[in-house]
Image (cartoon, rainbow, N blue to C red):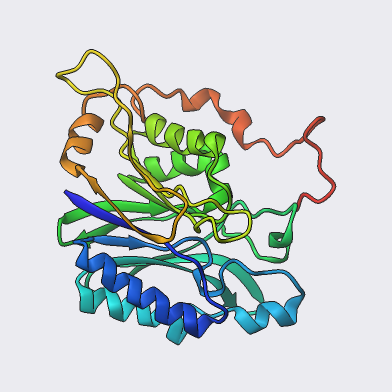
Length: 290
């Protein structure tokens, strides 16, 4: 079993305080037997990006900053993979980013949110240009892991690309209310791609958040049952805490080897319209970025 810890935490006032608290909760996750620990979206500043460039400069960190490197060191010390999030300073631009470290402290990839919320403050951020999947060495064995962030969830293509790149587990940092419809999106992404989806949100003490961090295992049917099963193996309440789900990776692999979803019966030769950039009413938006 792969134990995934969702660190549903309230942020502090500064990046240094979030670093200290984040490391403390990584240790708590390890005490609970976690193989992977996941933070909510933009943990280093608590997803606080209002204001102009000076405000972003003040709270942004680079991928080689003490903040990010500290979680790589903690991953090695704790023998536990860690997915940490941050407002990234990259040259002259800022990104909503996620860094994944394996249990040896090796950084597997840095992912920047592809689908930024351009109808809000995220319009000030640069968009990511790709999705990444990497084999992650954990104490429970290797698993192929990808990531998407919050609003990426609302585009089926995000999880589909990650599945096509081999993702067995998709990690999803989040910072918004996980109400029934967004939970349904996550459930659907797991079901249609036969991939586990683990989402970590901020607790209900944070504005416009409600906790409900969750894990869907992606296994809808079992050989011994005539009925489908609930793919949700964990859903947290609204409170702050460490919530641990046990993912049966071997069962997921067996399911992926035999079930009908995923890639076997797709018809990509007729999906060309999916990459057409033309937008027509009623979907034209003045604030859309080219």
